[in-house]
Image (cartoon, rainbow, N blue to C red):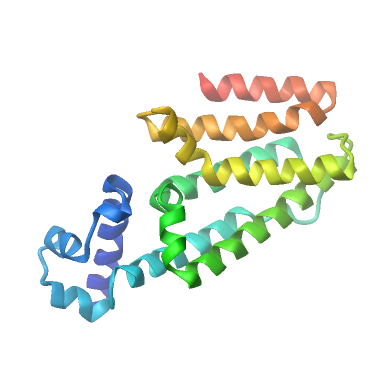
Amino acid sequence: MAKQTRQRILDSALTMFNALGEPNVTTNHIADELEISPGNLYYHFRNKDDIIEQLFARFEERMDTALAAPQGRLPELEDIWLQLHLVFECIWDYRFLHRDLVEILSRNRRLRLRFARILRRADEQAHTVMRGLLQAGIMRASKDELAATATNVLVIATFWLNYAAARGDKDEHAAIRAGIVQVMMLLAPFLRDAERVHLNTLTRAYLD
C-alpha cells in the first residue's frame, strides 16, 4: 500500500508539474489532488525537491535508454530519426524539467551534476552516431563541423520547449514534432544528395 501511495504521489506530481509548471505546484497542492494529508506525503518524500529528484531518476534512466546507439552495425538516417523520437518523447513526458530547467538546477546541485552527466552522454552519443554516418558514407563533414553540429543538436533539443514557449506556441506536442525536424535539418548540409532527398521526404511525411 505504501509503495502504491508513493507511486501515486510521483505520478500526480509529474502531471501537475507538466500542466502548471513546477514553481506553481506545492506539496500541499499534490496532497490535495490525491486527497491525502500533507503528513502522509511527507512520510514518503521529505519535500518537493525530493519528489523532483525521484522524477529526475526516472527521466535519467529513460534518457539513457533513448541515447543508446545501434549495436553491431553502422547507423543509418532512420536510426537518428528514431533516436530523436525517443529523446523528444522523453522530454515531452518530463517537459517540466526542460521548461523550468534553469530554476530547478539553480537550487539543486545534485540535479545539476546529474543533468550535466546526461548532456555529456548525449554529446558522446551524438558524436558516435555521426562518426558512424561518416564511416558509412552517408555524411561528409570535418571534425570541427561534426563537433559543432553535435553541440547544436544538444542545444536545440535541451531548450526547444523554452524557445517554443517564448515564441508563443500553444501546442507543445506540435512544438516537439517541429523540434525533431529542426534537429534533423541540421544534418541536411552534410548529407549525400540521395540521403538529403530521403530526409526531405521523411520530413514532409512527418509534418503532414
